[in-house]
Amino acid sequence: MTLLAAAGTEPEPFHPPSIAEFFPPLFLLLEPTIAWLGSDEPIFGINRIMLIRMLSALAVILIFVLGTRRMRLVPTRGQSLVEMGLGFVRDGIVYDLLGEKDGKRFLPLVTTIFFMVLAMNVTGIIPFLNIAGTSVIGVPLVLAIVSYVAFIYAGLKKHPGAFFKNSLFPSGVPWFLYIIVTPIEFVSTFVLRPITLTLRLMMNMFVGHLLLVLFFSATHFFFFSAGGFYTLFGVGTLAFGFAFTAFEILVAVLQAYVFAILTTVYIQLALAEEH
Amino acid sequence: MLTTALRMAEEGETQNPLIPQPYDIIWSAVIFVVLLLIFWKVVLPRMQALLDERAAAIEGGIKKAEQAQAEAAAALESYNTQLAEARAEASRIKEQARADAAKIEADLKARAIEDAERITAQAQQRIEQERQTAFASLKTEVGSLALDLSEKVVGESMDDARSAAIVDRFLADLERADLQRDGAGR
Image (cartoon, rainbow over the protein chains, first blue to last red):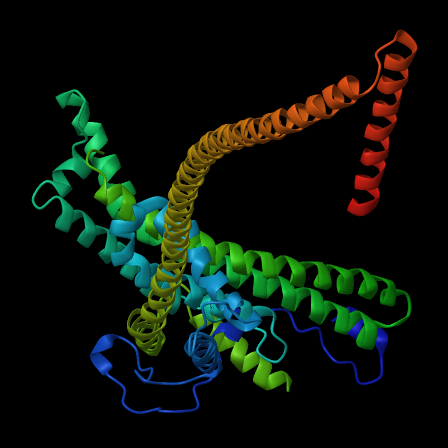
């Protein structure tokens, strides 16, 4: 504020990044609300972030439905890109860890998770969207629950009755150690897995957005409000903004990969004979 | 501007980003289900169909190549047997020709010998005949000649000189007669 006062003529204030950016106002489907849910928010409310998610889902649908229409034995350039994407998840993640037989059952799930997360991460650096659909907890949480349900389902289907026993009482451990091992196994397998899945993805995108906002709004402030000597700082923050935009691309792909591969690993561990 | 920012900031303070809002969960779940169905029922089956088709095409190609190779091997086999048959045929024909040639040669030789014998026999026969006729004519001629000579010898007085002259005359006559016969023969 002192800086602003020093700058003088009609100064635009510095906009620090805020949590409110992740909760923009709802503007569609404001009814109905359900009071007993503990929130007066409309249950089908649509805000900017919901729209961005729908847009990324639409992009995924268009790319893959149109990209796999009239496929040829000898692929065209577009088709080979789509094939490469699907092949990366299929061969690089699912078949690699689960084998082809078990992998076939879980391939749609992991493919969906990968491309949904990837598309919603990438919106964080797409101009005019500028916020990742995964930076609000809904998508990470829903996908973590899906992953949780999937690996428990896989374990129960493969070892009916023995899955929880195998998970909580690993064989080859002296009985008195179960006093320590069993709570640890329970917490790490059935409590921490969904939580870490959710928070890792959400916080990466959340912090990435805050960083980009910080750099670019500081640049704006230094260039247009502070001026003078501070323009030099602006050059620095702009450079950081560029660097972190590039870094966000990496994070977007990496987090999608991590989410998909962890889901697959959890399923693989559940399918394994012994724990 | 400032007031709206402040209001939003205030709202933001009340929102805990770790507490999901109902609409957030609902739309996330809806989008997930839609994408899952799209991948599960549309995209991945198409992809699998393509992969199967591609595998079939490659397998078909391999099978076709194997078939072509087998055909080529069969063709080679048949050519080889045909070649062997042809060789056997050729050597058989050559053998036959050699045998024929030997037979023909033997025949020719036999016939030549026969001819030669026949010709020799004929020639001998003719020589014999001619000898016979020559002998016969000579006998008559020699008789008449001896008669002539004896007549002449008896008709003349016989001294050495005379008898020598007679013989000379006789020989000259004989020569003349020969010449005349030759001239008439020409």
